[in-house]
Image 1 (cartoon, one colour):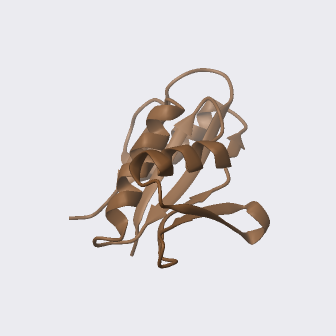
Image 2 (image 1 turned 135 degrees about the vertical axis):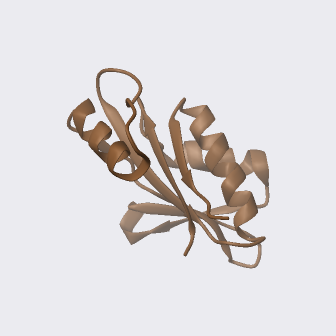
Image 3 (image 1 turned 60 degrees about the horizontal axis):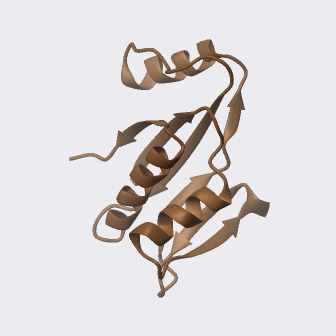
Length: 121
C-alpha cells in the first residue's frame, strides 16, 4: 500500500508545479506522463517512480470538498470559497518514497493547498 496524499487548493497542480517541486528536492528526477497525461510520475535515474500525481479535478462546490474530507479525515472545513481543486498523489513505502513525501509537501506549499496525508506507521 503506497503513501497517499490529497491536496485541496484554489489552483490546479500542473506539470510545471510537479516538475519544480521535484527539482527542489532532487534535481535528477525526471517527469514521465502516464495515461495520456492524466498522471505524472517523477522517476529517479533507475526509472523508479518516487511520486505519482494525478491530474487535478475541479470540484463543483465547497460542499463536495467537505464531504470528501469528512468521509476520510473527520469533520473539518475545506479552506476558502470559490472553486477548489482536488489532487491525489502517491509515493511508495520505504526509502524510495522519502523523496516523494517531501515533494508532496513542497507541492502543497507552492499552491497553498491543504495537504491530507496517509503515510502509515
